[in-house]
Amino acid sequence: MAEEQFDSLEEKIGKVPKIFRDLKDSNPELFQSVMGLDHLVWAEGCLTRKEKKLIAIAIAAAMRDPHAVRAQIAGAPNLGVTLAEIEEALRVTFLLSGMPAYVHGRAAAEEIYNK
Image 1: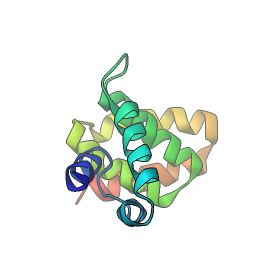
Image 2: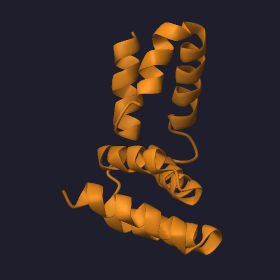
Image 3: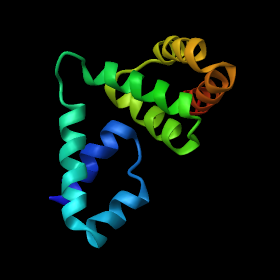
């Protein structure tokens, strides 16, 4: 069951952080709660998973979290997100969070998409 959850998480975010794998063994109850919330948040609803991914990329860039922005962008191609769509989302981030957030997100996107 946990491997299926990791596969699903990897599809969404690109790489399963080590902390999630460790959490499975160190605190199984918390692990199941986090995975349940993850499933709820990423389920199709009024917003598509693709739209949610663009929001997640923009938030990670605004927070200037290098691990989160790379993880979110790494999973973006799995949902059909294009570099142009990321660029547009990052422009909104720039407007609200400034140039450093935009540059941070854009550099990670170019690195991942131009491999």
